[in-house]
Length: 268
Image (cartoon, rainbow, N blue to C red; front, side, top):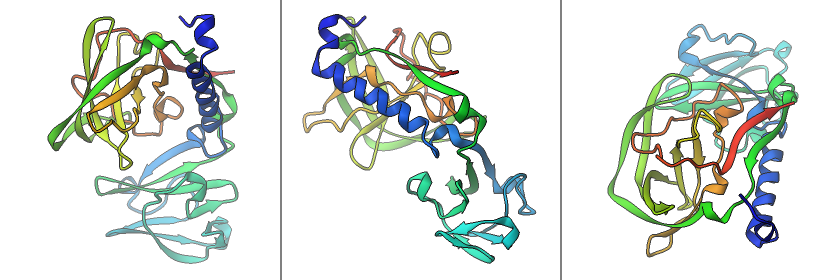
């Protein structure tokens, strides 16, 4: 539990800013709460996606979108009539190429399969959202760890939130100690050098969401890394069922209870 002294600390104030920023980002017009569907084109070989304007067809390494004026679609902010060839969107959602007024239709590719994600600022989930339940900063949950890279990156198959198995790339593990007990988490290394773990703990599915993410900063040259569980994140699928978040890989369920960080989504 945070003490008055901790709440006056620089670390607590930084956590508070982070927490408030997370709430704003989640509730943004094209944040995770706005996702109303992930539509795999293989499930719609005729090219018609229910509720989504246009005709969407796979063509090798691209998607071909065909639209009429009645569809009201724009591509790169210009009205679309006829065909356009699209690749996967890789930037922020609100910069996706295809739009219908404030709605964004985002082209996605996973393991060779194409999909279209529908982000609508008018989604019921976005308007029901009130806040993210999170435990206030407590220095107990911020500890030093050690990153141990694997000799070669490995990929394992894990179930995703949509019920399908997909590959999860893992680059190493971080080791850290909580209350005298050492724990390890397998992690991926992001392009900027930071780490990413999918983990569960003894609170998962009870007083916190069924699993969470952790994103430690890049380790130092000696492998030292700060493991700050106060910044455990709810995964995108905690905000919309249409995300395909991976479940924790084997070994990433901590035996300890971690009542820290983001715990659950709260609707009003």
